[in-house]
Amino acid sequence: MFVVATSFSNGIAAKLAEKLGARLVRAEEKTFPDGESYLRIPEKLEGTTLIVHSLYAPQDVAYMKLLMAIDAAKGAGADRVVVAIPYVAYARQDKRFLEGEPITVSIVLRGLETAGADALVTVDIHQPRSLDEWLSIPHVNVLPVKELADYFRVKLGQGVVLAPDKGALHRAEEAAKVLGLSYDYLEKTRDRVTGEVAISPKEIDVSGKNVLIIDDIISTGGTIALAARSMLKMGAANVYVACTHALLVKGALDRIYHEGVKEAAATDSVPSPISKVSVAEAILRGLQQIKEAI
Image (cartoon, rainbow, N blue to C red; front, side, top):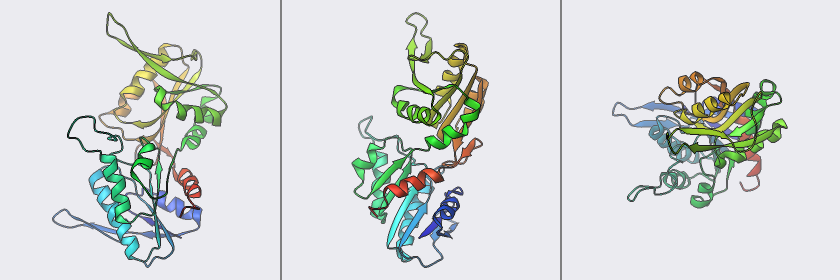
């Protein structure tokens, strides 16, 4: 097996190559004076090739380079090209919210298959059902919850795990099982007189306990900041935050730390100052799941 690293692999390709005992091939890349991208795979490939390539900013460039890498791998002799995408950009537009809008996740996914991808592993994609809806090739979505939970195991102690909303409850449940703790999700309520928004666990009492809030993405940090402030007001001892994808736009870190978050940790799916856990093991699990299909 060959593992291809690109400028959007963020070190994950090298980690996977080591774990798989595979040869690491570094793509050659440059930008032409007119702004167009160039990518070349400088070695002859054969058998199965894994391309590790995330779609963080600049997302448009990242996506074009991924398509080029897939085509280049096939041209270099790869019989099968498996693509691992630690962060899938454009995945949140998974339906037409307004008339005339595109469904961008469908464009991204169908483009990969058209370019020649034979299988796909994604990490904590916004809606895993999008993979079933738009792909005909083997695919799997993996969650790095175990790795994130283990990172906070000692610091959390006999605490609780919370999801920021009901939709993220499955992530909190999985983390809680890893840690042997209780879990819950946060509910928002609005005061009919003042309009003030309050947030609290649906059932669990957090008083005197360490709290881990776990989510897929931290973007502006607004949701996490509100949750942290609310948990501390309710008597939580410490609030920790974990996420898969730390996009961290518009001063997100300042916002959440200002509200009392003790520590925030994320994976390396996107380069960030809080990337403390690798998705390599999660991707490896995904590769094992689709091994028979490829």
